[in-house]
Amino acid sequence: MNQRDVFLKELRGETIGSVSAQSSSDEMFQNQVLRPILKLQNELFIASFNNYISKYKGDFYSQSVEKKLATIENAIQKDIKFRNALKGMIIGLFTTDEYLLYIKNSSSLNKRMMSMLIERLKSQIQLFENNFNTD
Image 1 (cartoon, rainbow, N blue to C red):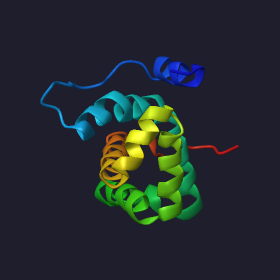
Image 2 (tube, rainbow, N blue to C red; image 1 turned 45 degrees about the horizontal axis):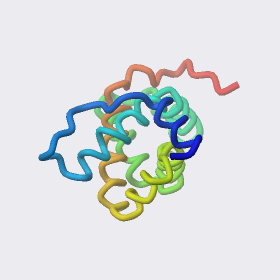
Image 3 (cartoon, one colour; image 1 turned 180 degrees about the vertical axis):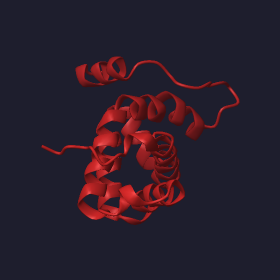
């Protein structure tokens, strides 16, 4: 394992969630790789979504909570540029071996990744208030 891989694993920390002999490879990847990265990158995701809504969704702050939740989901599912930027924030913290695993099943893992990220942002809806300063 090279220096970068060791650094990334130490930076991300421990597995989040249970992994057992019965776990699927996608579930193991999710708990050993994706969850720790999502947790580590949380503040960056919050800042990124705040920037997204300030640029593209000026009416976001006046929306109902239900509409705000739908906006989060739509932004990540339908705005390909934004989605790809978020994916890059995650994939950039993969080790080389994790990346090789990821590309074998990227479609399924992308769905998991984005679904987890949507739920993470939705659960922190209170952080998306009109007092975000981009300066």
